Image (cartoon, rainbow, N blue to C red; front, top):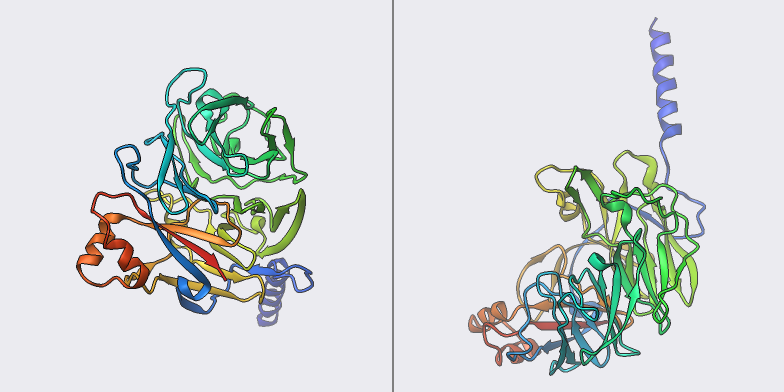
Amino acid sequence: MKKNVLFLFLILTLSACINQPKAPTDSTLPVLDLTKDYPKMELDIHDIADVEYVALETTDESLLGYDLLYAISDKYIVSLGTVVDPVIHIFDRKGKYLSKIDRYGKGPEEYVNIYNTSIDFDNEECYVYDWDRQQIQVYTFTGQWVRTIKTKEEFIYRHMFSYNQQYLIAYNNLHDYNNVKNFPDDKRPYHLIDKKTGKHTSLDLVIENKVSRTLRKGHDAFESMLIIRTIVANDKDMLIADFGLDTLYQYKENKLVPIAVQYPPVHSDDEPLIIAPEIYTDSYLFFKPVRMRYVPDDVLKPYWDAPYLMWNRKTNAIMEVTKWKDVNYPNERNGRFRMIDQCNLPNNIHFRYDAEKLCEKYEAGILKGELKEVASKLKFDDNPVIVICKLK
């Protein structure tokens, strides 16, 4: 009897080992193992980047709302506007206020909703995606309307970037919403949109089994992790990290190239473990391994609780960043800096400091270096200071 029990135990153990997915050892691509405990580090941004602090000029015309995103080039800093604050402001690279785009309304040259904004610095045009009217309004940097690009009813563009002088690149996010008209699933959800004609061209990337950021759908509501992106831009080099795929891709110069694979495979668990990309440069990928698990009281808890990992693409080493630091701003910051969505400078990352907090730190005498000098000229209700970091 004991022999039979032992034999059965060995069979079950062997079966479990056979069915357990294993990290690929023969892959020609780097493997990002999401199950490992990586060495921990506290990262001072000055250790990996040259840092610049730019105070945005504050006037009656340029007073910014809270929690805006920004797009930055070597000539401009642009606040992108939101549903709550539907005005786009343009500053020069030193922070001087230049102009604004304030076309909120229901007229043919206006927008009723800013769902997404993309900046074409080469052509000095601003693209405002108005989902409510299923169109993209195009404006000059001085706020003049240029043209309207109609979008398809079965598309919802959660992420949209200026890819090159001819195209926008966007991700069709319809499956993350209540598809009340039951449009067919978009198997090729990544699209190039012609900036002149609006013609759509699908990238040759098929997603058969998508992983939705929406974890619970109701009759008239849904709970999701829409904060997580599948496209991250490094100027005209795009990272595509689709949650339904095990492979991460680079899309650059109209070529789709695999750059890494994740372990375990996405679909090896009922609650997929996915890569949520944060920052993508020539040398680094910062990301979070997020378990797509529904938490009733806090749908974003799996995201906030996930470790913040840094993959060095040159050495293939992975570290866990437990704290971000700025030697000029002595303050413990857990997790990550708030990164700005559109990076139009290669190998740059950006975040911001609010003027009120900088003034408090300055009066307490704890700021240092260039940041101390910038803060000495601020008032509590001024616009934020943008921190621009050129990675080494």
